[in-house]
Every structure is written in structure tokens, then in C-alpha cells.
Image (tube, rainbow, N blue to C red; front, side):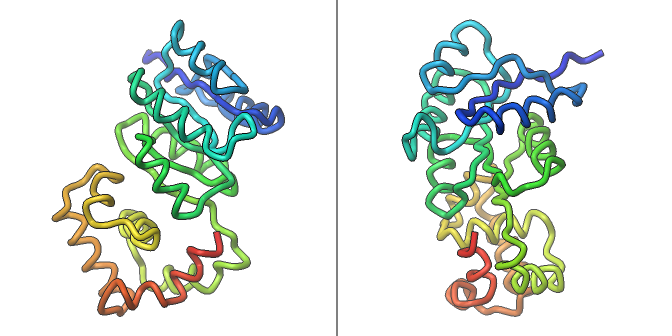
Length: 212
């Protein structure tokens, strides 16, 4: 039997940490090996037990970007993968997470199933960028996207495009070739019946993205 993946939870809100721990307790392939509340505690923990996946927020220790700085440190000093789990899901936070070396970002509005899927995808070597949607404010954009029948990969590319990522940055974030990104961009623009990125930025899709 394959040993479960070792997961470290970094979270300074006890209720959220408790909920995450309870969620993972029921997963035979995921084992919470530690729960810490501060960046310093996380740095000390990984010196003795190296997890395979670290789940951490953007804001930590009362500092708006302490989680991002911790992510950068842990990715440069350990082999663990990093998932940013946060209430802050605007384009700047996504880009900061990418530049810090995170393997993904999931909004706290995401469902437990989506969070578990993100963890397993990252542990398999994939990337996930999935801010949790606000159903009330994004309903129009969501309906249009559903009608366009974008693939999940095209939706990921679209989210990063709306965050003003270049093709090269999208390729790096999703671990794919730039030529593949260009193919996805052409495909999603065709499905959305748009001729350019500029047209996309003034569309309902951009409004839906900004609402998060």
C-alpha cells in the first residue's frame, strides 16, 4: 500500500485550521503531519519533517504578504510543493503566488471537493489556479462561460489572461509550452466570439473576474 502524502498546514485562524485538518483526516492518501500558526514555526518544522505539500495563506502573522514570503522561502529550501489557500484572490495575489514558486492557489470560497482536487493535482505534478467564485456577482459571466463550453484548461488560461499575465507567464504558471498557451488563447477567443485580448478585457468575463 502506498504511503499517504505528508501535508503541513500553515494557518493562523484556529477554526480554519481545524476544518482543514478534519477534512484531510478522512482522506487515506493525505496525512497531516503538522499544523503551525506562524511563519517562524513553519520554518522550524520543515527542518525536522519535510512535508510533500504545504498549504498556506497569503496573510499570516498579521502581515498582508507574509504567507507569500514564506512560500518563496520554503520553495527555495525544501522540495515540498506549495498550495496557497486564501481569501485574497485578485490578480495581484495570483501573480505574487506564481512568482513565489507556488504550485497553485485556491480561494477559501472553493468547495471541499475542489480543494482536495487541487491538492491531489499538485501532488501529481500539476498546477491549479482556482479563485473561489462569488456566485451572485459572477452569475452572468459564469452563464456565458458555460455556454461557450470552454475546457478546464482554457478556463485556467482565461483566468490568468484576465490577470494580465503574458503568454510566457501563463506557460510558466501552468507548466506548459508557450505554443500550447497560444493554441488555448486562440481557441478560447474563438469560442467566446472575440477577436483580441483587448476585447476580452472590456467584456462581462473581465467584470466577473474583477468581482472576486
